[in-house]
Image 1 (cartoon, one colour):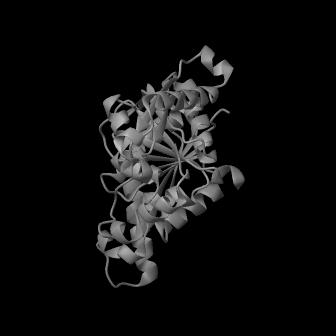
Image 2 (cartoon, rainbow, N blue to C red; image 1 turned 45 degrees about the vertical axis):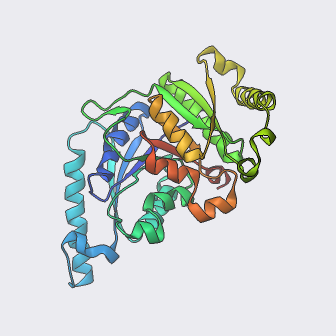
Image 3 (cartoon, rainbow, N blue to C red; image 1 turned 120 degrees about the vertical axis):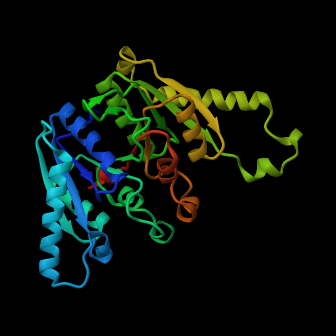
Length: 305
């Protein structure tokens, strides 16, 4: 599988956080010779952020659209990249999802924070909602630090990619994307599986917990399964590393990424543990909000459309 990117979309609400997406979009568009769309969705329910109040609705929207277009042109500047502004009115996640289908977008780039405030606690972030509705991969960024793009020269320095593997269908697809990106940018590939603590192991007495011998066999089986995911021809250009972590997946993956200075984490949107996902939010979402580097979320939903 080779990742193809012909159309890339950056979503921005003009906040500092969301504007971090632009250098990534420009650099990736150049690398893949893709068309770049810069999208801003006007949410009339939050109209006060534009400095507008009770005015004629049509005049109000036209004024804000013109203002947004000027800001987009200012942000993109004189970058040598084929790009097009997309300014729409509505709910951000719904509008971006619609544009993905309309423009045949291959990758969306969004930030984890924007103008959400307390809404995050009630409705979840826009990025989290995008993660669940998009039919294409979503690259999530949230900091100018630990980036794999030089914002001045738009040069991509993607050297270490960590992919979470729980052997679910979404996880397998995430691995395919990670493998393709590793080949594209000659990056090192790290395959991680997290063993979560079970309630039974916590309650058991120490002498009843899995013996060291059984634990070693388990680790060996997982390692073999991880290595079996790597095609033989891929071993000609990379030497994949495997790592078996323990704890809560979002904590373990984030800590490993930080300790080993990863440039990107690739995860499937859906994995095992449906009840936990419904109650606490997906592992991918929690990793994205805490990770020290950009996170690429991938879903099999994209293949099923």
